[in-house]
Amino acid sequence: MTLAITGPTSGIGEETLKALVKSFDEILILARNERKATEMIKSFPTSIQPKMRFVQIDLSDLKSVQRASEAILASTSQLDVLINNAGGIFQKKEITVDGLELSFAANHLGHFLLTENLIPLLLKSKNPKVINLSSEAHRAAKIDFENLAQCQNGYSSFTAYANAKLCNILFAKSLVDKYGDKGLHAYALHPGVVKTRFGNEAGGIFKFMWKLAEPFMITAAKGAATSIYLASQDISPKFNGYYFKNSKPNTPTSTARSKEVRDKLWDLSEQLIQKLLNSPAK
Image 1 (spheres, helix red, strand yellow):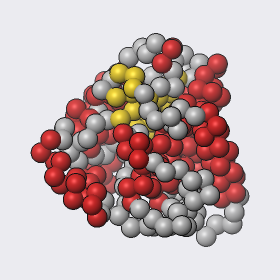
Image 2: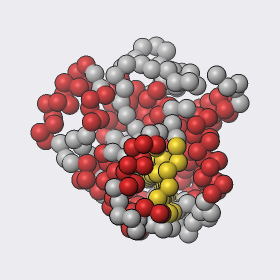
Image 3: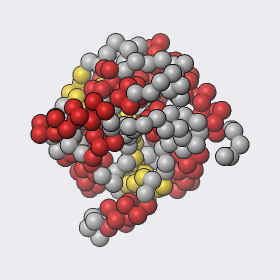
Image 4: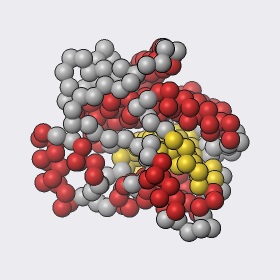
């Protein structure tokens, strides 16, 4: 069996990897920093290291995602579990090389492209799974499709993050809409409020509230529990496409459950990918 995971060099991703490493024959370490990935791989027993392979990817750069996808497609016969774990909140508005707001690109669109490219490998598995790390922050989303990709009408780090986390839930459900009848299972999840370096990237009132909440936060190992559960357990088909919290199905917002909204997001994501991948290199 083969596992691919984004952002596994620290925090929740690292703890998820540690728990799952013995259950897979091949593990693709999808990360931006080769040095950190190599050091992490070397931290595992020598008997484990040969089945771990680094694939360089920058989720905020669509051409980087495309190159990573092509490398995986060329060297891997099938993919059983894809965990879209990487993500972040960004204090200041940043525009990517593709002209997109960074939170939208790194948290959603990069994973959208990666997953779509790897669908042929996933569908070769007997029980393929896509697992998206979302957040309860999605409940604060204020999704505006005219402003979603670039945040041209003002920027709030928390709102941009909340919108992206809503996208993660919508995307999981859309994957089931489109590929569920071919055997694909897709889920989104809230890992809990985890004590990692995540909050350091935020600013303003959110950073202040994060600091106040730190004594009550859970460890990264506990935060990884739902990802591990979804990746390793047989989940009832009736929960395909669901949002999970504490390893149990949970009800997200009505917007997160809207087929109209998720169809709009899918169409926008497809249009952006086609336009940006076909544009001249910058």
